[in-house]
Length: 138
Image (cartoon, rainbow, N blue to C red; front, side, top):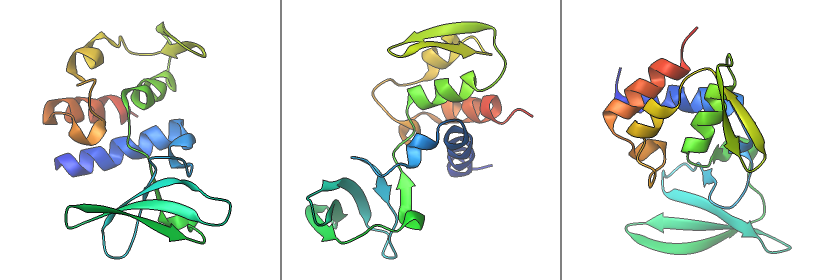
């Protein structure tokens, strides 16, 4: 399986555990026919504002609406992966701002693999493959 396929499968499992990933919020990625990079910036009382990256340049794009099927969601973070792990059986806890998260896996291996400055797409192949195996257990 390719690295991109691993990422897609991990993303599906994370979205199942945390549907908030697909909410239309700042930083949420928006799909488009031309495959330009679009990210949601906000709403200005009349229109949605999107940041558009085309040919290395950034500009703002204002649209009346964003279709639900165009919403790709925000990048997957370590917090999303930890919430996904917590979706399973319990053997321990992680303290967060909102309380305790139960986990079925010792997070120390994940924390040693994860580059804390990056989201899922920018992790090493080793980390992505390890996460895929962890999150796609039946």
